[in-house]
Length: 361
Image (cartoon, rainbow, N blue to C red; front, side):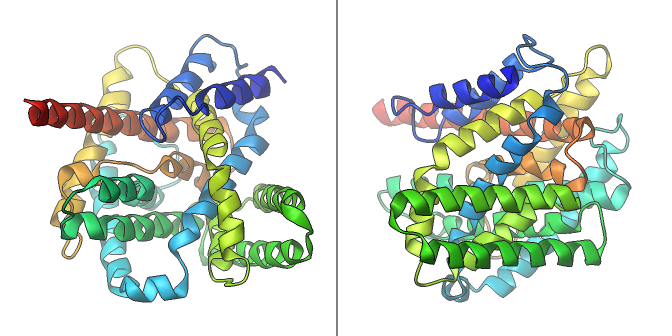
């Protein structure tokens, strides 16, 4: 009860409009969770990573459904998705293999079964660009070039591929098909129920309830929440009749859901003490960011600058949970990606301030 109160209080505090819409509030939420977590002030008990499973699943599910907004068939056709998807899957494989090989030389930062699982997880996380940041950069650009115009589409496609590929973690093709089938069923159920709902209040109630149902069913069956709820979101994105209404609700409540997710992810972060600190906390994030920037910079058709390739989607923090049940074993993976997330946001923020000072001068 205390843990849930801390999460909700933190989410409400950081959801205030006087904080900037996206940055740096995401890092503040993550740091708040780390401060309140078992390895910080201890306001949340040591078993917080089990107690908060349902709430974290709901936040992850909400954000994953919202991430599917650009995955309608008409949008994907305009974006030439097939060719880009092939490039991104190849990127994920190369980046994942390189990172897994590098990190195998250090104490294991990710508790996943086997080299292939580690490579897939790292590669998918490296693909997970933040579409919202790309859209904001495009809106701010006075004379947007090809990179600014293409970045939102690339980011949406990359994040979706990462979430769908998480279905392969912790199991084989059969488990992946179960996750995609369950997600499609949840999406269809949501469409049917919301068509019968009267008024916006009932629509929102059913949206929350069925998202929670889908996330809870995924946990019960041992399936990745990200893949299940993202698939449900893809079904919603292709329903012309209810698409705009449902995604308006998802977007309206995005901030509290994202804040709660980040606070809980921060509570999962486990910072080791002693000589292993640098090998576990510093080396993996540094390798992760370098491989990420190199991949997006060199990819044909996706040549993003280092700054455009840095913004990491907060949903990447949930990818380590896809390798199995929501237990403390996922904490090292979340720690690696969380530190990468903080480093990327810090570098982006400092670079933006330097540009502002240069323009003012």
